[in-house]
View 1 (cartoon, one colour):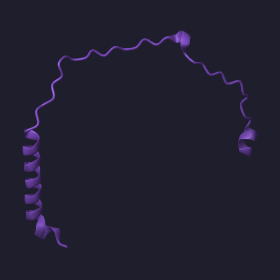
View 2 (cartoon, helix red, strand yellow; view 1 turned 90 degrees about the vertical axis):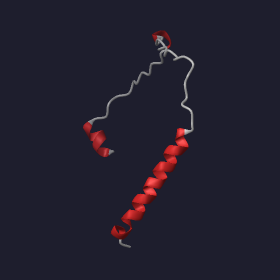
View 3 (tube, helix red, strand yellow; view 1 turned 180 degrees about the vertical axis):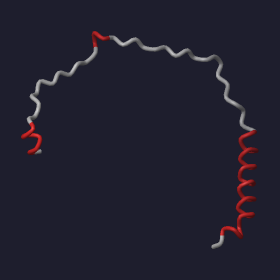
View 4 (tube, helix red, strand yellow; view 1 turned 180 degrees about the horizontal axis):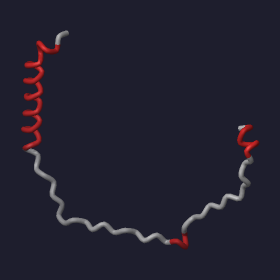
Length: 67
């Protein structure tokens, strides 16, 4: 199918869709919040922080090659 022949129809269809979308969204009221909510950053409690200790030996070059 030759798209060049149908470019006018494609353009008109795109304009119709864009116009319908703009009219449909124009009727929707904008959402306004009553008051902005302040973001409160939680302070990290380091006394309860989980710590992982790995007590394994590292692989030698020969062991790495065997994998």
